[in-house]
Length: 200
Image (cartoon, rainbow, N blue to C red):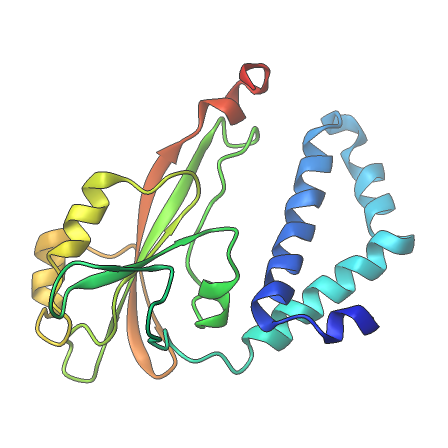
């Protein structure tokens, strides 16, 4: 546990996400008839300890998360002009967990889902139902150019919920994070390398 103490919060979250992805890949590699016994093994011994650590890390790191703090020269921020811009973060990044967006319905394309998955666009609103912070585009494979064009149409502090409905349609999930209303949009994606692993 001592080395974990020196990790930054985002590194801790990434560790937890990588662990659960490792478990998923292990389950993929076995036959369904062996799934029950394999899961039993995964929850015993060293892997169980790692799982508990990973779970604790995710809870601890996101428990006091704020909502999308803006910093200068942020590597994930895409500027599209004055009061226009959005964050583009990989699903492997721990940033969106840190921002309190763990409810985002991100689905990684896997063999189990025939190569299909879901990216997510997150849009937070203030008390006046206007976009409060830069939207967040959580992508699993590669960012989609059409989605980026739609995000560029959002004006911070001006675009309201009615405008967002015209641009993106009805939200898949409506929730709250950090005291703000948050809309989540699922974007269906496809990775043929997950459906047909032999293509790798």
